[in-house]
Image (cartoon, rainbow, N blue to C red; front, side):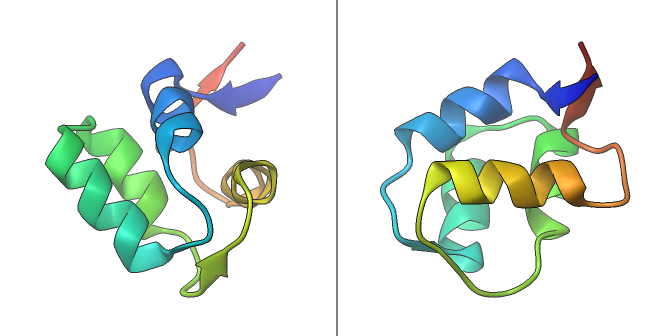
Length: 71
C-alpha cells in the first residue's frame, strides 16, 4: 500500500483550507519539508484544494513516488 510520508501528512493536517497549490508549496518550503515532499506538492495540478482528504487523494493518484512511501 502507498501512503504519504509522515512529515507530508502532518503538514497537510496543519494547513488551512482552501489552499492554492502556490500556498501549499510556499508554506511547505517555509516549514522545511524534505525535498521529496516538496517535489510531491510541486507535481500537483495548479488549482485550489478545498479539503485535506481531496488533496491527499490527488497526491496519492500522481504517477510518481515523491513524498510517498510504501506502508
